[in-house]
Image (cartoon, rainbow, N blue to C red):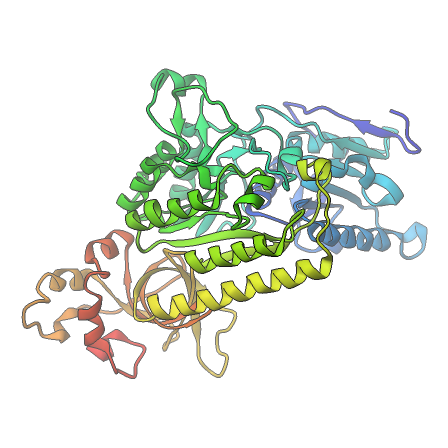
Length: 572
């Protein structure tokens, strides 16, 4: 195609390879945006490493500088533009003959949205959309080779079937105890405000078999303790592959709840999200399972019942409301009303999973938002009392339904004022809720190691996350982080209604606590969404579930009440 500079427009290759780039070439990969982008970067890293490149954390050493981008809001894109200008200035600085040769690539959603515009003014050399990562090695070769007259290369072709199921992702930090696993790509919901269907394409799901095998490998080879299943509408997952339909030609699974509408017409049969969730949780009782980002319409009773039954499916639900106004939800094309949403939370979710933590998304100042509609959002937040929330002022995105039919007519100062009020309501509620419901609780915490706040004021501190995905910090008293484990405790707990010598609770030696262990931590303080507590003992997910500490809370609390110590053994 015509251009001031030769530009290669390529289609994906099934066998990517390098001839121009040598094994001495290095790449640096920076990721912006959501967990899906983190997962995509793991796929890109795998492809580049397979082709002989080496990754470096030092941008100054890298030959190839890639930025995986987000386009969900204007602010996200502004950060990327700032980075691209910085990289352009870097490679233009100094005498021309002494400049280090570098290649700049833009990947992901912003690449898909802006396409060739990113090549202007020397901003980038390569632009690759989310469905074209397989072609990245070939595009690098086209631009890097001095034998091929191509200065820039683009592949932003969307796919109807690409899931990268056959590529083994390479995580940036292989020793992390948690990992994201993509189960689905694209989105079919077409909410008025959302750019995702235009940057990530049509919804399609990976085979259940490939997902379970990837997680099995992570558990077996990398000692994974927590997995988060990823999708743009993760709970609408539906494996309709040949083997899935052969194994289950028909199903009585109901996808959407009463009062929720879906624009997706599905074939019967195959495997649904509850099937996948059950199979993943069956891999080992010591694997925590989370998922994001879901849509409220796809929480049928079968899924909620499964969550209430399985101790290793986390008591955490993301239920993005976006607004608390029925008229606003209609303009947003969300497919439900305020009443339907509240009925789902109050009458379906909470009775089944009473200890669940609920998070949400909220948009302030969407097209035509009135003060009354804004107040409806605030009152919804008061009614649900969310444990976490992602709150933003509306940012118009091209190609969306809102861009085509609505006006971005809420003044910026009004948007910011309403956003501030939304944030204030959330912060007030989460502080009150955690103060009322969390303080004193015994939580099973996945230990993440020493916190960044450690040794502040001379106190060593570790951190982890509860089943409800709340971050908790706890002080440790010894260098080796020794504590007791619950082996004896489980035996003695069965007799706690009788006169038990409290010293008998622990009779064995102490054990060392390390990253990736589960530990029981009693919450002592709540500061907004963050908790503080005291380490009691090392446990397992299965062991913690068997202890049923939620029903024995008062009994244990009495045993350690008013004790000025961070060690449970000192208390007893």
